[in-house]
Amino acid sequence: EEIKMKTDLNLLLECLKYQMDRPSSQKEALVAIYSVCQQNSFASDYFQEIGGLMFVYNLAKSSVNSMVKEGALFTLGGLAENNVFCQQMLCTCGLFEDLHIFLTDTDSSVNLKRMSVYILLVLVSNNKSGQIYVREYGCLDVLLQLFRTIPSTSKVDLLDQNDNQYHLWSSVCSALCACVNNPQNEDNQKTCSLVFPHAKVLLQSCIKPEIVRPICSFIGLTVANNCNIQHFFYSIGGLAVLDELLVKLIDNSSGNFSSTKLAVVVTKTLDACIADNSAIAVSLSKYNIVPNLLRLLSCNILDTEEQFSIILTLGHCTEGCGRILFLSF
Image (tube, rainbow, N blue to C red):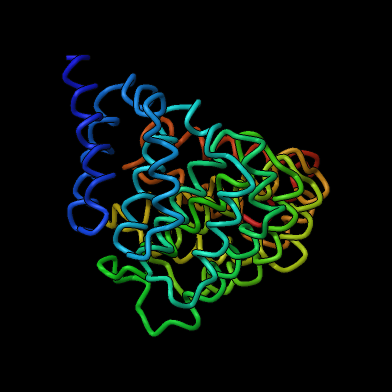
């Protein structure tokens, strides 16, 4: 098995090197390399040892063919995703500078941008150095710009999941989540909070899971364990929007499994916005959050974990403010 893996990777690397004038063959070889390395935990190490990692990286930089660039970035992302050593090897200022160029170049295809965002996601995941580089080399600003502009400037319907623009936007949301979380990065949280007004507008205009879930994940992780960011989200009316969204979903939940489950997602986001912040919890009496959570808790399709999430949020809502919140119920 190991001998076959090594033989396959050697042959595939040779194919990459000697098919420079055949982009389709190179793309096939890149996809095959990705597949081999996904199936075998030692394959990424071996491919790096034989110079494959750096060759694919240089291919991503130098190829004039967009399809090959996309394939090379896809393969690099797969190698780094499954191998911490490969992630560390690729986590360089040079690669972040290259990714910034790919994302800002007007000639870059949507697919090339998607692959660039994918490798950014991999490089910042559970990686403090990657989180610093993504900010210092301007990639975080580009991600935030994409988050803001794709829904408003493209004529594409973000709800059409068959559209590449939706996939790009969804990937951007995932990458932003990784930029602020595991480990928590307060500088990136502060930077990401700048797009909260845009996130708020999107939540006010849509209750579809394809939009709400990514945004709620992004908000929840950006405010997590950060009182300053929690206060900022509250100050722009963020909690009011989440409360309105919760009401819409609960009202729509009768016999609607999807709406009920999405209401739990919104509940978890609410919890992140107020947890360990009694100053905000005290102000919740102006909303109907507690009564709405109690309504949600009464739904009979919730599993134990979902019920626990709601109860935990109720606990955080009532911390430091006694019975006043329940008077509105």
